[in-house]
Length: 64
Image (cartoon, rainbow, N blue to C red):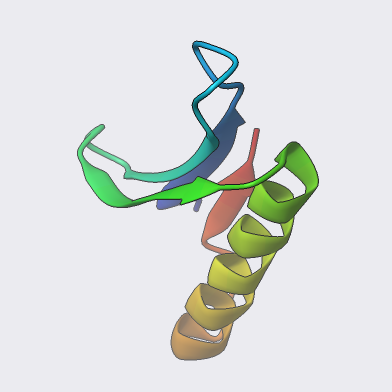
């Protein structure tokens, strides 16, 4: 069962950063962080996924 979902949003304007967000099943935000690029956001989400999987011992996270 997937309990968390993550996504990286593009900047809404040229001077603003990308934003990586992790949502709980109920749609509330677990973590939101400004990141310098889409790739950096994907790496952050992967690190969060690794932490979540290690803590739970099973798949509980999806990106995208």
